[in-house]
View 1 (tube, rainbow, N blue to C red):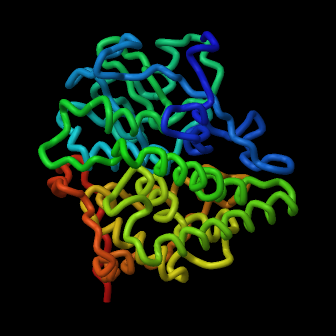
View 2 (tube, one colour; view 1 turned 90 degrees about the horizontal axis):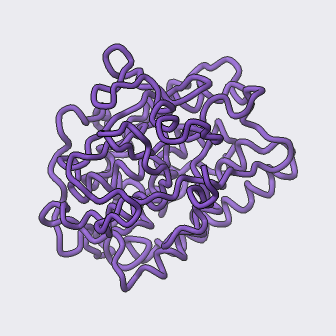
View 3 (cartoon, one colour; view 1 turned 30 degrees about the vertical axis):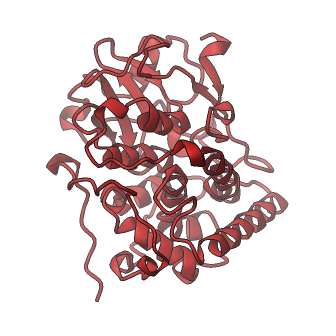
Length: 365
């Protein structure tokens, strides 16, 4: 693969993000089966840069039915694509293949499908789509990925750019009432906020969890909670991160917050406070969770299974915690008092398709 075909996603237009996490990497984390790194955790930053665009300038024009989004509900980076696809109403033009919450040492696998084979792509491992295009592909097999169905070849795994392109390149196929998640007049601010969220929160929890030295862990811990305090202050008197509607920035923060108490607080030692003990962020996260397109993409069982089973060097027993109590996600959040319009001039998405529904949470007591 040529240098031009991969890049650091920190260079992505509209994004300063690095690549997917260990969730998005082939398993185990390295040849020794370890995710924890000596000293400070550093993330691989190379992704396939090919884009699917309205003008097809990279050879892949936007076409309904041509591509398949491959994701995993367990993965926070893939979760973003599930949310944006729902909010924009792309379900009928971009099919969805879902990998299970765990994976083998080679790849994410389609173990949720009958026979362990994706019914559209006809492959058992996502790795097969990568190798179909790049026989010597040298990096981790990551989700999310978009696959060209006619050729069976991966097009891109650049998750930061994928969601931006859903917003800006797939507009001809947005549903009526789709929100503008990346409004041009706010892009500079969205990019700035998304950058610090990535560095200190999205990636920050991994810098805590995969740190191999006490000092590296404590630096990451302090940086994480300093940023969460900053976000609490920012969101204390405004409903959303940028402007008065949901944007890409909210999607990017939500997928980390929703995993905080079930996984990051204990498994990754991010334990100054639980999310449920941070009043502003807890209310903000509940507000988004209860917004159509967010909570209806979350499968807490798959999330917990992934982290506690796959990261065996952190959790050698692979025992998955029974808790926490999840019913609080459905309690009133009171954020409506701050104003704001979740979908701007648009409307909520319709309910998920029957085959894309997630398990319902228990009602609060």
